[in-house]
Image (tube, rainbow, N blue to C red; front, side, top):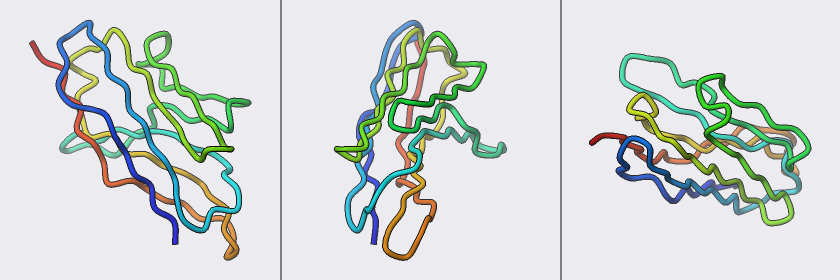
Amino acid sequence: QVQLVESGGGLAQPGGSLTLACVASGSVVSIATMGWYRQVPGRQRELVAATSNGAYTNYADSVKGRFTISGDNAKNTVSLQMNSLKPEDTGVYYCHAAIITLRGLSDYWGQGTQVTVSS
């Protein structure tokens, strides 16, 4: 079994910063990609940022230049530094990982962490 545990999040003022972190544990053989998704009520979960051990990164247009994703496959971790936060960044952020175990490649999700940007 694989578990993703998230930390960080909370309340920030517009223009402020927050950092999210996620660590994968369990029967991890290797990690293909790790990333963060955001979900708000009434909308589908959407990609915020993803990385493949730092060699590849992908950002949603809405966060480019403000958010930075960092992954470390040796430690099975991924973090998301969020700067210049806007109210529209509010949502539940989920850590996602595509992980190879002895059973093959599967998708895993964290439990979600709330990010609220408000004055």
